[in-house]
Image (cartoon, rainbow, N blue to C red; front, top):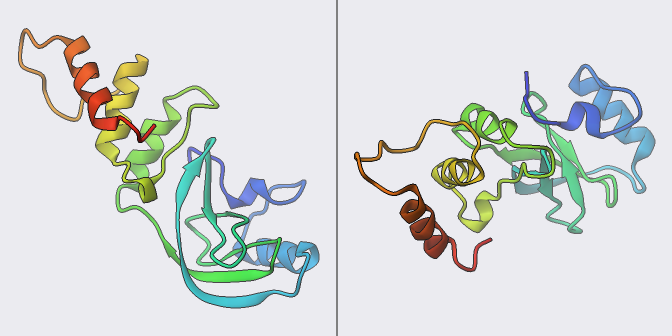
Length: 154
């Protein structure tokens, strides 16, 4: 079960239970005929939702890890090649600990699981540190180093 919002509840008024239900919704709701795309999508999290950017038109594409397909309802592109993170479950747990509106992860911008964990520590979210800090290490110094590393990426 996903801790974040996914394709099942992002498309249509009622939650979908199966990939077949989602496909039927696409067929009813797409602005254009559905056409298979051979391009690969990269999953990321935006505002607590698993999504990708359509490689054909740039529109938003809702994702669900249990559905091997995703569709852009703007242009009708249907994708069957979706790159999911190998650390999916851990990314979900780290992001789910944050308040709504602060649940974002963009691997295409170089953001890593370790970055998410450090960000949670800075936000004061209870999460295990990615590395054990030596006694006497100032958490403020850890934050300063992190901010220097992330300069221009946030």
